[in-house]
Structure formats: structure tokens, C-alpha cells
Length: 409
Image (cartoon, rainbow, N blue to C red; front, side, top):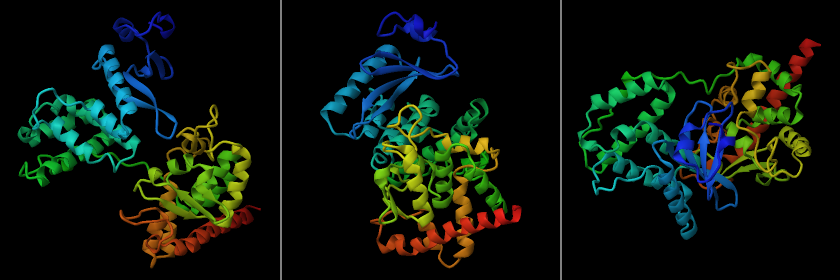
């Protein structure tokens, strides 16, 4: 059945089950902010459209179809909307409670209950997107098998077989390793609270496949000037500037993609990255070398009145797609050779070689800050030392590019 053939809302279960996937993912409105999502691979799920406390619209996953029927999804949506309007509870908590529901029985010894308890301790530590990602992984791969069981009686071999099955049948090696760490941490909660004597997941990671990480793929440093020249000549000037900033300031790619102009103070030469955007949930300031300030002033001409440095192509009040840097490097011929995150590895290598006695300052430049460090400008974040280091790195990149151009001329 094609979605154009749907005649009424709410959508009947007959129509839901017969909806066909298309080339691109799509959503069908079921009513009252509840949407039915269909992916190109045929997977179907429910999502609730809601407005966050900052006034922006977002999506909240309710669960997969057909496991969550239309009737149950609508009931969940009503409860979620009521919770959002009557309380100020964080959306991440609402998501956790609804996406991983507790069994009706008052059995607190199930793995499901232990998971719920563990998640409640993470609500104020994780970002909303992290909570959604981890809840989804547990709900999709672990809780349907282990959720209703007494966690104290699940044997190590059963966990081992489950993870082997996830890897061989679902073929998600990298994600299975992340899920293993989540489950191991969940059991650690039971262990430190003296409910179990040992963690049944201990040591299993040694015997399941591990994915080779490609996140830090990067070119040899001696090839960096060639890439810099290619980036400067990239046909889309706003993407070219953004990539130059990504290399020069080496933030996490998502931090630059989501960056807003209000986070920059060009007069004080600093980029303030809010805590909610940071991996460590600590506000972090990046000293801006004069080359970065020049690039930012050029970029402002292209972003216009958008709040984002890189506004979306369709909606300029939203950031650019999360594939913007990957696609640009792919067009330049660097697919598989250089990833956006790999620029952080390059910067780390160069700075550690040059400043081998200033390891803590290099770590602060990379925002590898320990929890508890307060404030952007305090001595703990080595801000004054980082001003010199960031300017040195920008000059280093300039010198490399200039020397390369001279050699080619």
C-alpha cells in the first residue's frame, strides 16, 4: 500500500502493516502529533513530535512497529503529552520511562527493572540524544530477550551467546560492543549495591568480535598541505571555510556543525561551547587565532541572518546535515582516508610532538577535561596557555600551505 492511498486518520493497523518503504524515509501523521515512520529498509516505528523547553521542535521515539501497535502508541503519546504539560521533568527521563516501560508485576529483580534504575542515574549526566540512542539499543537488542528475567540467574554463557547472535545474525559488530559496555555497567550497579557477588558479563568482551574503529582515519601529516589546498579550492565557499575551521580549531565535528553565532565573541577572540553540546557536559572556551577570526567574518556573509554558522539548505533556522563534512571530503577524493574526526587526531599528534612538556594544555585544547573543572577561563582549563598554542597551530598550518605552494610554483 502506498501512503497516498491512506484514507483516514488514525491509520488502521491494516494500513500500517501494508505501507511500503520508499527510496527515502518518510513519516505519516496518525493524529495529535503522533507519526508513523517507515525507513527504506522496511523498518517501521512510532514517533511523537514535541516542542522542547527552548521552543524548538524535536522527535521522541515511542517504539517499533508491530511490537507497539497503533492503539498502544496512541496511549503512550497521550501519557507523554500529559507528562510534558503537567511537569518540568526532563524529556530524557520521559523517554526512558516510556521507551523502556516497567512490567506490571512488582518484580524488582528483573533485568528490565535494573536497567530502569541504572538509567535514572544517567538522566542528568547524558545529553538527550545519548539517552535516546542508548535506550533504543537496549530496547531493540537486549530487553526483548533478557528484560523479564531475574538478572541474578542469567549465566555468563547466556550473555555470551546473545552477543554472538547479535554480531552474527544482525551483523552490528561496533554497536554490539557498545551495548556490551552498557549491560556491563548495568550489572556493576547491582554489584556495588551488594545485590550480586560478581558481574556475569566480566571477561566476555575478550571473546566477541571487535570492530576496527574508522572514526580517526586520517592522512599522513606530510600530505596535510595538499589537503589544505584542495579544501581552499572547494567550490562551495561556506563549506570550504567550515572545513578550514574544522582543521584549525579541531573541535568535534558535531560541535562545529551545531555552533551558533551567539557562542562566538570575536572581540574577545573566543568561542564558548555550551555545556549541553560538550561530551563532558562542561562549558569549554576555544581561543580563536586571528586566522580563524578572518574565516568567521567571511562565513558570516554566507550564513546571513541564520543563528547557525552552517545553516540548512532548506530550513536556514536549522543546522546543516550531519553528513556535510563527510560528503565534502568524499567529493575531494578522501573517502576512507580522512574523516572529519580525524583532524583531531592530526592536531593531537602535531601538538604533542611540539609541546611534549605541556600534555595537560594539549588535552585542554582537545576538550579532554576532567569532570569537576569549573568555568571556561579558570587556571584548570589552561586558557592563557591555550591562546599561545592555538595561534601556534594556525601559524603552523599556514606555513605548511605556503611552503607547499612555493614548491609547486
